[in-house]
Amino acid sequence: MPLSRRHFLAGAGLTGGTLLANVSVPALARAPLVDAATLGALRRNVGSVQVTALLDGYIDIGSELVIGLAEADAERLAEASFQKPGPHRAPVNAYLINLGDRLVLVDAGTSDSMGPSLGRLPAAIEAAGVSPDQIDTLLITHMHPDHINGVLTPAGQALFPNAELIVTAADYAFWHDDANMNRAPDGARPFFIGARQAAAAYANRVRQVAGEG
Picture 1 (cartoon, rainbow, N blue to C red):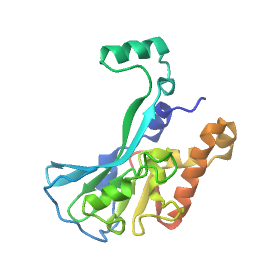
Picture 2: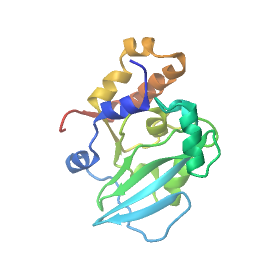
Picture 3: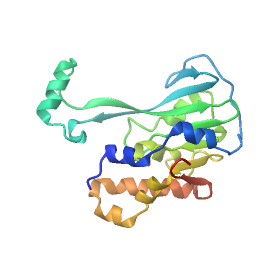
Picture 4: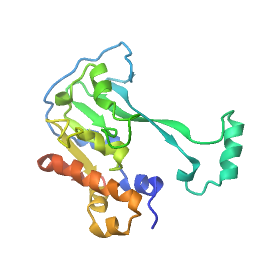
């Protein structure tokens, strides 16, 4: 089966609200709720919870990455939205959820694995008034490099020293299956290596969840 972002998103089956309700790791540090907007960090209050969107950077995406989209259709859609045909710039974000007594980071960006326009999550976290050691939980929606590689420093060490890493069991199994990696196109094999390195750096702090877990 060809690799695609759509398949991996569907396969992950990760329900953030369900997982957050069951995260039992005690908060190692607390951060106050704040009002001011900062560069690379946009906040929104949702009831008593504060969500901060953190910008890791951007990637230029060509129409060839959209499965089933003919080039003629891509050009027509671009014209209809008053854009030039060609790659479109897309942000790569992570989301910091402040529960008051716990800080949860949903996805973690890319570290230095996808070029100079990405890998800015640590600066965005700092701009939000938080340090990596305050993060209690890393909730990874799926183990693509633009979601999980940022749990590592450029040297390959765990960036978040006190955080539990939560992934779905199905996603973990997929990326750790040698048969899947051997069948993958050459361009996708670094995805497997990155996912494995990230999980290994948090080896004693990885939690796999399945079903309604």
